[in-house]
Length: 59
Image (tube, rainbow, N blue to C red):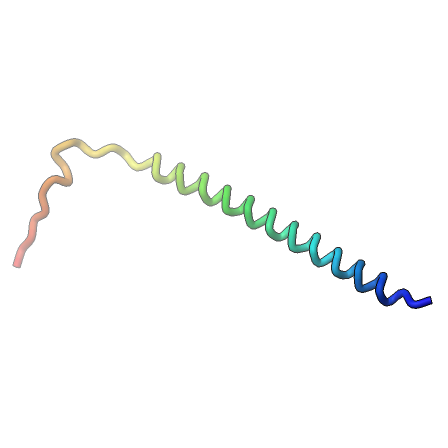
């Protein structure tokens, strides 16, 4: 009885599962990074209206 085909199918199945797990972990990491970036942007204090209107240039 030749079982090499069964072993090959089993290995291919495991590779597909490993890829799916890797992609899921990557998506979760990207979601966490996005949440951190949003929190950093929201933590920037609002500037008064008179700041940031002019640029002083010295030559």
